[in-house]
Length: 230
Ligand SMILES: Nc1ncnc2c1ncn2[C@@H]1O[C@H](COP(=O)(O)OP(=O)(O)OP(=O)(O)O)[C@@H](O)[C@H]1O
Image (cartoon, rainbow, N blue to C red; front, side):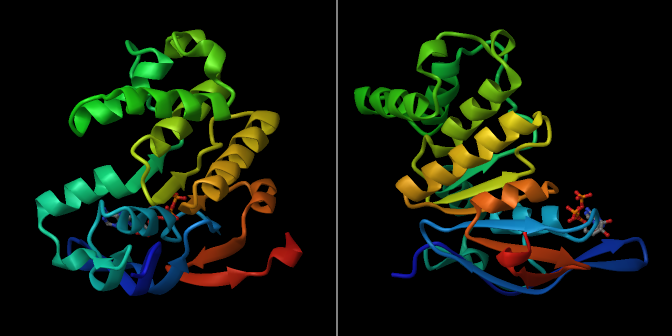
């Protein structure tokens, strides 16, 4: 079976009144398990559109999107929503934690949403939080921890359902430099050790050193960017 994420000739056209905006133009990309890819590019070049399509949040106008060999266009709304819950972990610009849940419960909520919480789930959550250096703040609430800790909690949460794909949209936007490095390094480490296929959209060129491959989005087209120039 093909694993990871595969996009072939994906285009997206938005209709804006009488105008058409071509946000993605024949984008092709394969991300294999264990591979951490960065996508950079100017504002408006199509990065958010690309990540939304890769995460099954938005439908392509044409082209093929496959997750673990499963083509998304053939799936019902219910199947797509299950796939998002089970196969995709999202990390966003801000951590989007729930104010009234402590760090551990932020992770267990993911399990509650997809059924019930078992003892194994709790053990797995603790292991993730320990790997991300959060084991001393399990019982703390979001307003009692730092921005870096909140973002690390969001990373742990993204891995909680053991998804095969990790998608990060500017995960360092709200962090200072040292925390930004720490957070991206941790995403990279978890991606490798848990064999996930990961894409990070970033404006921050200093974060590219933690990635295996870098692509640049220019006017909806995806170009390979040589890491030697980073
Ligand atoms: N819902 C929409 N309807 C119409 N046009 C849209 C829509 N969403 C995005 N666009 C247009 O598609 C193009 C790509 O936008 P997109 O948000 O994907 O770029 P981006 O690289 O993520 O930008 P940023 O870094 O500012 O978030 C832009 O020209 C944008 O104006």
